[in-house]
Amino acid sequence: MSSPPYLQTGESAVLYDGVCKLCNGWVQFLLRHHLARQVRFASVQSEQGKALLRWAGMPEENISTIVYIDGNQHWLRAQAVFRVMQHLPAPWRGLAVLRHFPDAIGNFAYDRIALNRYKLFGRYSSQHAIQPDYPGRFLHKVEPSH
Image 1 (cartoon, rainbow, N blue to C red):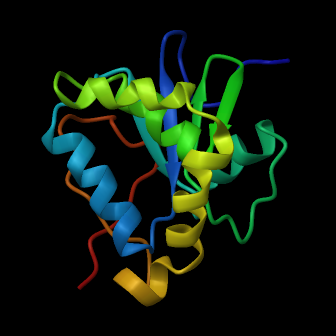
Image 2: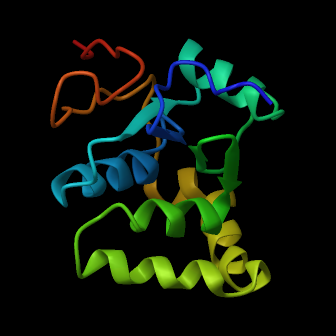
C-alpha cells in the first residue's frame, strides 16, 4: 500500500466532520491539551480529507465517524479516538488503554452519539474554522465565516 497523501513520514492524521459542533469541539480539546505535533487534521469535507478517505478505501460522502491514519493503517470510531489519545500528555494519555477493550463495547457508545451528533450538539452551515496551535497543523485551509 502506498503512503497516505499529504502526510510526511512520522506524521498521522485525524479526519473529522468539519460541520459537526461536537467533532470541532473534540479537535479544540486536543489542541488545548497539547496533542503531539506530528498529528495533523483534515475535515472530511476538504479535498485533503477526501483524498485520505479514498486512500483508506472509504467513501467520500456521508462519513459519520472519526478516522485516524497512522503509517499505512487507519482506525475508525472508538479505536480512532483511543489511538489519538495516546498522543496527549498525562493524564489524558491513560485513556489510550481503552483501545484494548473489545470494539463492540467502545463502539456501542460511540455509535449512539455519532448517529445523533447533529441533533444533540448542532452543526455549522459550513466548515468551521479552528485556530491551529501552529502553522501547518491542518492539512486544509478553512476561511473564517463572515
